[in-house]
Image (cartoon, rainbow, N blue to C red; front, side):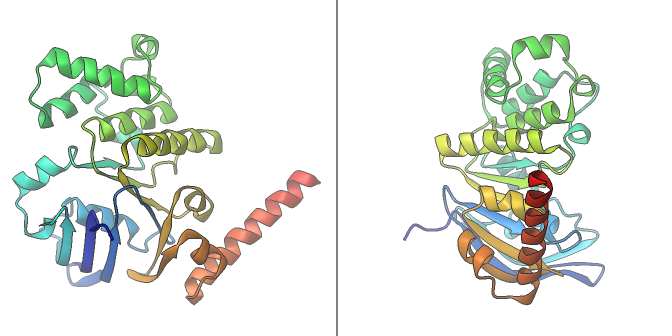
Length: 268
């Protein structure tokens, strides 16, 4: 078997002594998509923030082991984490508009992300940025008419964030509720874009969402988080069709009930 790209062991997080995550363990292999599901407040985003070293050390206490390519990120300094973020680990978060600098050209934001991690000159970085943006559906024509983030739609801003996250060819992509603010059509477009890049590059992905229907279409394996505890993990088909934990069964039942209701309305 291949050694997992990411191995999280016994991860615990607390805020001022209040437990948020308890003894969470899972791994992710190259090319795999792990869907992490659970209701709002379950601790899903805390996993992403802990993994990337973005939790405030003055507030959060983090223990356990987060091993990425053999390196324990919890024992790594900020300089090492900064090198990993954006290069080996790409991140897409749920607020694309708020994640972009409104006073900076969109293209320049991708250029900056590239130059932080790659020793290439400004012209090379700009050419690469334009290629990444074009691959994400942000053409030169779009940038000519809407060069700033506030001039773009939410869906277009999320495409920019995909371009930024993938600019330096990461091995792991963390997508934390990346489509929650988008309508169903835009959701499908963003998911298709991410999966296309994944198929071409073989990157691993952690896709975090409360939307079981969405995760069912994108994930190979699913991890279920409930009140900070990983209560179930398995291949997608197993979790969706033969859930073991009571909480997972309730999520699946609600999802199937909603799906059946949509079918009845559509056929009425």
